[in-house]
Length: 81
Image 1 (tube, rainbow, N blue to C red):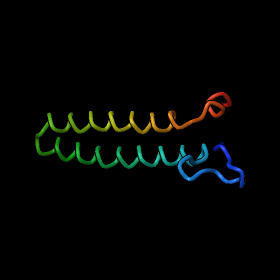
Image 2: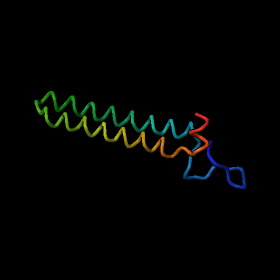
Image 3: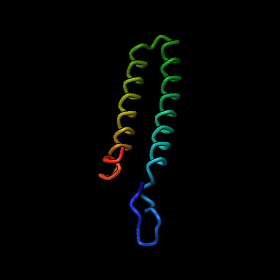
Image 4: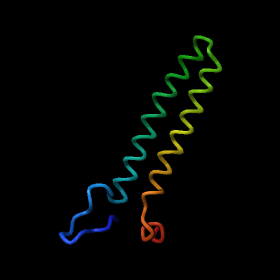
C-alpha cells in the first residue's frame, strides 16, 4: 500500500500496489503484442535478423517495466509480499 500523507491520500507519484501491478502488466502486455506482431511480419518477409532484434528489444523493455514495478515498491511492501 502506498504511504499516506496527512490527509489520508496516497501521493500522486506513488500508486498503491495493485495499481502498480496492473500498470506493469498492461505495459508489458502491450509491448509484447506489438513487438510479437512486428516480429511475425518481419519473419514473414524474410528479415530474420531484424525480427530477432525486435524480440531482444521486447526482452529489454519487459525487464525495464519489471524493474519499475519492483523498484517502486517500498520497504514495507517488499516485507509483506
